[in-house]
Amino acid sequence: MECCNTKQPWYKKISTTLLGPGNCHGEVNQATQGLEKIALVGSPNVGKSVLFNILTGAYVTVSNYPGTTVEVSRGKGKIGTKEYEIIDTPGMYSLLCITEEEKVTRDLLLRERPKAVIHVVDAKNLQRMLPLTLQMIEGDVPVILVLNIMDEAESLGLKIDLKKLEAELGIPVLSTAAALNKGIEVLKERIGEYVYAA
Image (cartoon, rainbow, N blue to C red; front, side, top):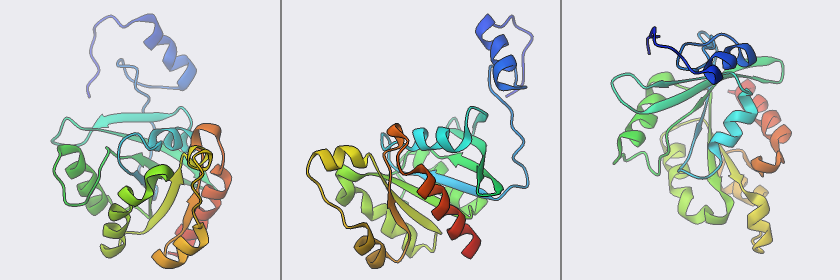
């Protein structure tokens, strides 16, 4: 997006002071070139953006994916001692794409080849969301399954055996309650281990 010479509101001017150099649209530009990538995928309303914000902090760039009107957020996040480009992809339900958002996410996974793909699911609706996990496993995508909103699932009396699910799927499986900042340190550790072992 090219910057324009139009007068910008005070809140966009101050965002540069608070968040660092950006453009006149109030977006923060952050150099992530050359960094290994970690992508967050999942259907809408599962807490992907909350996790993205926790992993990256405030310094993110939002831009349209080339040739589309679909927005993709990118930021820099430190996991262990290493920095990664963290990508918050548009919502998707399946690799068999129907919407433009799903096509963008699938294309991004194929073209940019992230070192790890974090599949964020709503723990209350695990059965409905696992087909995408299975598609990614079959497609040899380096996936980690994150059961988010676990606090609500537990309050409904749902019990999920994470170790058994991990053994059945053959991929890392863990739980978080991202809005409460629970499970984040374990997630970072598991991502670091997974990427290092890849």
